Length: 171
Image 1 (tube, rainbow, N blue to C red):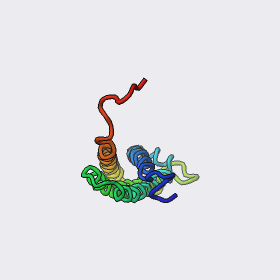
Image 2 (tube, rainbow, N blue to C red):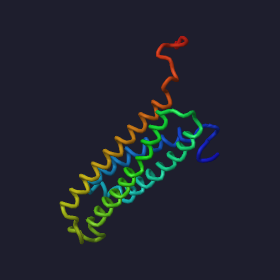
Image 3 (cartoon, rainbow, N blue to C red):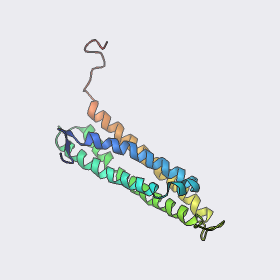
Image 4 (cartoon, rainbow, N blue to C red):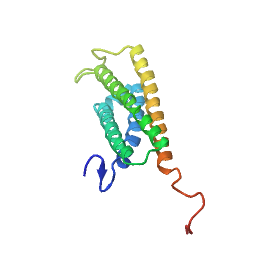
């Protein structure tokens, strides 16, 4: 088994499913935590850890996809899919940076053990608002990019590969 072929099949087909699930999940968690600091405190390190795992999944899928691209006949749809795929990493890196910032501000604003009220440092409302707006923008960009990449990949994989009319009785 290698990072390009698993059980005789292209690994890209498996790895993209991690990206398809983890990017929207990370994006949703980020937006919720940015808008709801108590949620960020509850999730704790899980938020940036999830974003980091998501970040690691992108080059894994991209590498396996580059291998697969080199092992299929040249096709403009495959090239378009590969080009779109190359643009996802900056969006996911943005998710990681913002997840760390949201976690850090939520952690810093939480009362320390034994304190009754008031944190030693409360992030200004402007900072929390900016993080929420940036988180929403980057999360939306990442999810839309994953959709566009997946759509182009499905078109590349399935165009001219099936008949619009049944070739045999399906029942």
